[in-house]
Image: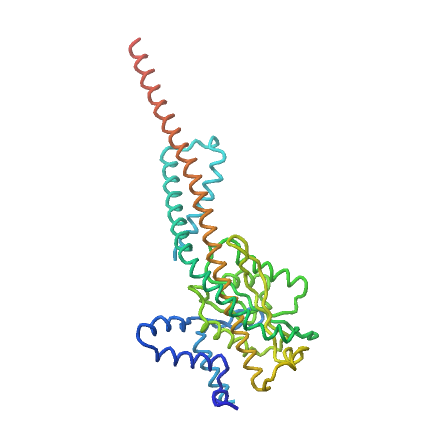
Length: 72
Length: 298
């Protein structure tokens, strides 16, 4: 099993981390344009029985999930 | 935001138009007509500006759409050559991912998606919903609230990024439900004036391994779940960008029409205003002259 999977990351998260590392190592002028492509500011909520749950930040929730998956 | 602020004004404009049909019913004073004329002019300014903003965004959005469509199609090619079919899971639910956005004032593209979902619900209501964007959420929670499992907000502020699609796909994959398949519902861009709700299938690992041409590929079992996650993110990215381009294009059209209607109303009211002004002046003249004549004869 690959190391990132053992750390609880999904494939998409693994890709996102790799992409971020590449973006950060670019030269200054290219980096600014590239980092804009990596931005996301989404919120989400889970629904149960037709009721909306608590609205949370997606990036934080994903990070938390990775921690839980790693522990499991 | 502008869109919210403009709403009462638009409603006021609509109310004015219904009154304009029968101007003889209540004789409007000059001041009233002037006030309405001014407010319609302001609405025209707003809609016109929104149209210009949408037009400038449109080229970029369309370029992103063509790129992401090619990208998504390429990503799905592997399933096509494997001739993957969605599994006929008895009693298992399907998961529908609806790609709308947070912003309105763009014609009927969000309600087009909602209607599509309701039509699907009439045929076969055995599905759960993941909704991207506030607009479809408010529309669908009235009728389909029980089916919603996740909703995302903050979609469609700008051209969607792949990072967004990945983050969304991550949450969807971690859903606890057991689904027979995932479908991504989005507005397909046919041309600048017509859009059509369509779906992209996203296959499960089992569906892929069960496909007739699966033997043509040499893959490790381990990688398959990665492929599934990645393909889902690709499909969502494609759907989001194409939906975004549709929305901008629809907004441009809607604002174009609104400006045109406002222009018509301004013309009508200008004529009415001039006529009334004339009538008032004539009335005053008649009063003065009759007064003068009457006092002369005394």
